[in-house]
Image (cartoon, rainbow, N blue to C red):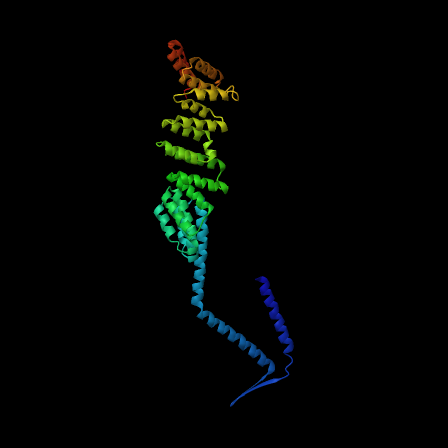
Amino acid sequence: MAMRALFWLVLLFVAAVVIALFGHFDAGQVLIVYDPYRVDMSLNFAIVAIVVTFIVLHIVIRTVRNIWKMPDRVAAYRARSRAAKAHASLREAVANLFSGRFSRAEKAARDAGVIGENQPPAAIIGALAAHRMHEYARRDAWLEQISEKDWQDARLMASADMRADARDAEGALNALAELEAQGVRRLHAQQIALRAHQQLKHWPEVLKLVKQLEKREAIHPAVALRLRQLSAENLLRDRRHDSVALLECWDGLPLTERQTPRIADLAADLLLQLDRPREARKIVEDALAQQWDARLLRRYADCGGSEALPLIQRAEGWQEDHPDDADLKFTLGRLCLQQQLWGKAQAFLEQSLALAGENDTLKVRAHRALARLHEELGNTLEASSHYRASALAVKLT
């Protein structure tokens, strides 16, 4: 501003100097005749008069024009001021929302929504703030205010996410279904659907969504593994009363789940409860072929049924690769007990005790098995000794 004022001041001085220099040259006269009037003046004065008249008329016209447009200018100023305040409120709403001041965020969102262009984002922020305060009716009222077509995807996605967070799984899936009907398929929508189906215990859908998210690397491997196992376990438990359905479900599981010791152990246990020891044995043997696991070994001892000899032969073959496995010795001891091979049973159980080390749980089980063996043989003193030893091996915390 200072430079501009200086420029105009210099220009004014230059003009004054030019006028002063050329004012000495009065080379002509201007005669204006309008009967009966006659005006005679010098050329210099006429030029100055024209310039002054032009300037005065210009100022008068601009003044009248400004006065005429004053209401519009005031209205425009007020609109700009209102828009500036609304934009400031929108920024304040975002800051308060992520700062955890949800009540302030909702109030600022209400102030920001006074202008149309701010209304959709302000409604989203207000809905999020109300949701964080568990004011679900107000949250839905905020979302209903969004009518712009370009904001419908955002409204539905936000609604689904918040409903899933509030454990309204049905509402979340309805919002996602409406979004999908519009041809929208997004990664975040699959993540929300996974949470909703998990809440509703729709395990087949959970398993399918986990696979899709894994392909897109949109879920942590540890979380994916846990959800796959959880889905498989619940799918098996849902069919625990029907052996045919249970086996069909088992065959339909991915190979990685069927080779997981935890799931294989559960499937074998459910089949044993349905009196299907042969199928349970096959499941355990297949899983042990992929991953050696003490839990599966203990379950294997339950799969003998009425004829444990084939299982004993198979387990003895495993000793070549696992000669010092205490759990394998314990399993062999239990199988020999079922087959009433008392000498072999005692030998295997005593070997298991010798190899148990710090495994107190295995010690307790081995002592109890030896106590039952001696009861069968009529050795009450030996049975009492092992029962006492099993009680002492229990660690109380």
